[in-house]
Length: 572
Image 1 (cartoon, helix red, strand yellow):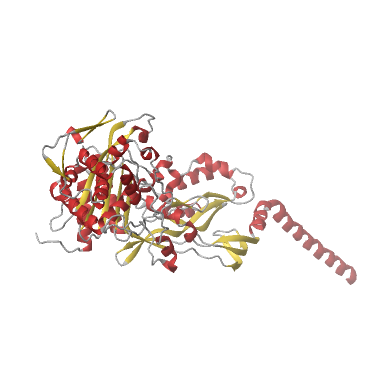
Image 2: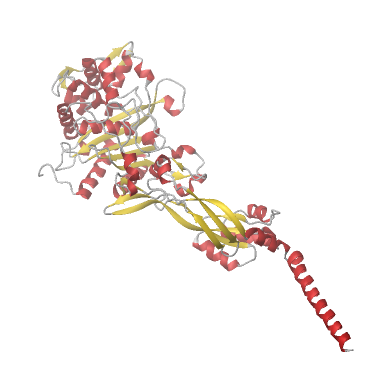
């Protein structure tokens, strides 16, 4: 009897254990099949390639650094569609919290997918807090490091952005991608999707971080330059504009501003890719009279003229039936010196100077000043024109080129050429990466390849440089550059107002439009220059650069003089 009761007890125990096991299996395989399937897929051993952190980019801000491009930890939301029961309601709630279209969220929620689906990156604090309040099943938060541009629009064309494929695009991000880019490593991990994402165990073959870059750009000067361009939009209704500030003896760039700007954090929202082009290096323009110092430099250097050489202005010169007039068809009576030609920006005087040296030498000097070569500036996408039409050797082409029409250049090429005038005749290459940047990675970039055969050598003599500088000082003291004058300092500079060719406006016709590009290039203190500034404005609502670009130059130059506390040349 006792034996039978023991057997019955064992059977009862087996029955209870079996029922419990079957119930557990039913719970796992039937009731919570989706959850445990997702968990099994989410908790597993994975071997993945891991990209090392990208190097960061900084501007100079006095004795400190101002971050321009950094790596920031962001939270993102992902969902498990099969865990969401009331999908319509969930889509409605998420739409309000995340500011996304309900239908797009619903599409993702309704996917027949046991795995997790990413919904939105770069969540704000407000979005995160509101998501936590919802606290519904199927919503998960994770973390990732993404590129962030804390200065937003500031220096946007200079920095570029990190594209969707993790490669730098435009600007410094593009040019120095190999330096900034982290090297891949191997990550072996066991992971579980949870709230938040949890790593159980990881083994690394470490990835290598990219090198940081410290730029030569001064945050304060860059900020002021961009501010002045925005004000030019309000005051002069400019369509586009650039300002370059450079140290003429070395090529170190202190500011490179472009208008209009974009926000590199949201580059993907831009509809027109033209916004990404940096007009300082990626757009060709005809400079106008700001080019006249180039022909004067050639004639002075060949000793065909002096600053006091005179000629008689005929008012108009006809070449092959083409008339060449002075600005506003003005005629200047009496004997006119070469210095006065620059002061009053006389076109016939520039033609006179070009004829003294001849076409072949003029062409050679244009090459010497680097107008047929790229500058090698360390920004992605620099272009330049070979000026093939100009090189054909027609008389009219050389005549118009002497006063800056019919020849195409970029603003950075013009800046480099004026630096040679300012520094005693040496052609330098502009650069943005500080040679003392982290691990010396920027130094190699700063020592730019000698893209011009005249790099580092005297394109004009020291004597010519001094003579031409004195002539350009006279432009500011007595000529159309008067608005650039700063009491206590000698400022050298030249204006330029050029009509825009129809072809540059997308019109396949010969000739020029009524639109103008107005430019001023100047440096100070003139006989021991610490900085050189180019101001270029596209189609301002003024007649000439005297009333647009020159006042902007003066304001920025005065700011730099005060900011750097540059001693005056003379007492007022």
